[in-house]
Amino acid sequence: NQLRGGKQVALVSLGKADGLQPGQKIEAYEFMEITDFMTKKASCQKSKIDVEMVVSNQIDDNTAWVKIEGKPENVKRLKIGTLVKRAPLEGQGLMKKLF
Image (spheres, rainbow, N blue to C red):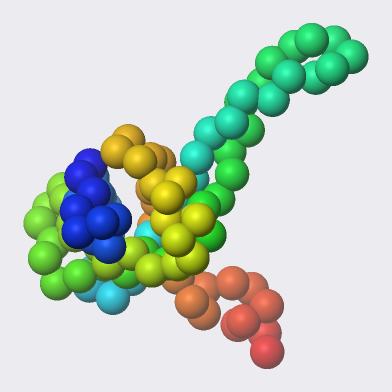
């Protein structure tokens, strides 16, 4: 993964082979270690980073460039190696199909 242009664009390790198409959205996550103060056991929690990442037309089988938009404090949370996955496709949920 790469971040360029002051974190305005990024190269992600998802592409056509993963079903990605230009215009689709990508979600970014960061991991935090949380320690239970009573048991002292540590666990890893996944937290979604509140940014919008839209796939550009620069897409290969295994990589794609995405445009990043969001509040500066959220964009700062993006780092090389940040976990990304394709956002749920609109209109695929049961409630959307029923109503």
